[in-house]
Length: 460
Image (cartoon, rainbow, N blue to C red):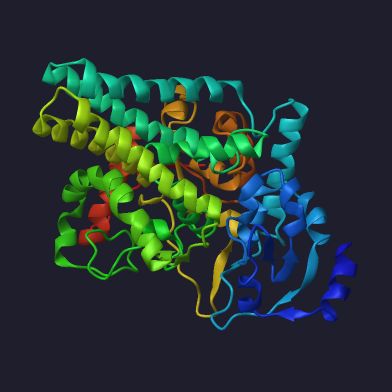
């Protein structure tokens, strides 16, 4: 169905309320909304190249997710499943402006990137180096775990292994599961699914991660009241934007958060996942209901992690309980610090934008433009940081092309930089990781005290 025919069909199409669409929220009955139009994609499920990512926001507005994960040609496929129009909800859509000249920026960028990959015979979802890297990470998790809790008796050697174990578990999060749960690990949906489940093996939930990160954060990056990654409570220990509540203790957040970030992994494993089930949401993001398979995978993941990570050392390790507790806390703190320090430098720095919807409910930037101006890169050209951060040093590229394996980011970053320059969109790149981390803590100080700081970034 062409654009003209689709427009004609829309005039006489059936209109569905948001509540109508929301009832079709499972793999067996999946409707989605894209640009105010309703599609029944249930039949497409078994053939969908991204596997169960199709259902990650079943029954909801998937406009931003659809655009970011698909080449332009996918729109023709989607049109086959059109069934009607969506009624505008009471609060309105989270509607972005067009991306510079009626969407031209993102369309031009996509065509250039995918042409480059096709011309150079690069498979966007597959890279041999990713499998080597995954083997090394998972092997390090296993070997360091054994060394920490069973092999070594010397406390210093045990602590060293615990640090390595914590960093390796964080690497599962930033590298393996991150690509896999974005559908960027393999052409096989099954491989992506099970490599995504490695997150459950190290304690957190891949299901909840996709709800928060894919459904919420990627669709509404740094958007006040919509992005779950920058959410705060009324009396939160953290304040990251000027739109959020301020308390006197925020004057010191750039000091105490350096320590509290170490609790991130523990909080996620022991609190956040279960709170999401109880609340039915993660901040502003209403989570999808579990399928029977997802329910099994969630609880079995928690059981497996608890069995090998806690019970096995308690029952069979030669270490005392006090020593075990010290080693657990050390490993978990290292995991938390690494995850926090990697993710925070991407969006919580002074040189990116924090966005609030206009009075009419719309966002004044286009969605793709928003991904650029709300994200920051660091250490371009560094193979070490590309692998260590799982490609998060190319955060802008990741947000524009989440379905591409991070191994390829250094090759397509110049295309993104050049296209942004052509369209006059500022692209923030910190020259080193140290500069990016320093910028993060200076930003915390700024929003905590009101101090104005100079930019530490180069803008391309």
